[in-house]
Image 1 (cartoon, helix red, strand yellow):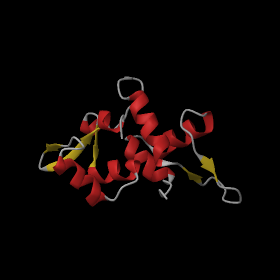
Image 2 (cartoon, rainbow, N blue to C red):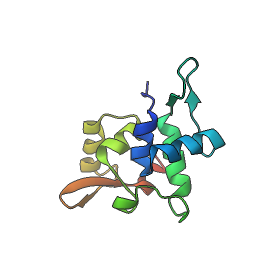
Image 3 (cartoon, rainbow, N blue to C red):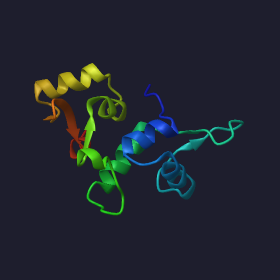
Length: 116
């Protein structure tokens, strides 16, 4: 089972502030569940973050990982794909998942999440 993301984790993956993700959740732009009895605590399915990233990757009004120009770290991609970091890295090395090395670190283009 894929672990749900916290508000902070989702914000980091999306490259936006925590308050932005909270607003998107409240307005329905991003799907998530508010925990009953847990005032203000949200949990977000990584698949919903993936769908949001893919749907908005070319939209200039939605910043998605702006510092890396549409790339996710291997760790971020692993969470969205429901894989371990090592399994994600291995897929990249095997050629079944595109990865790019930027400034000495491996990243997964957001577009790679479309078919995975």
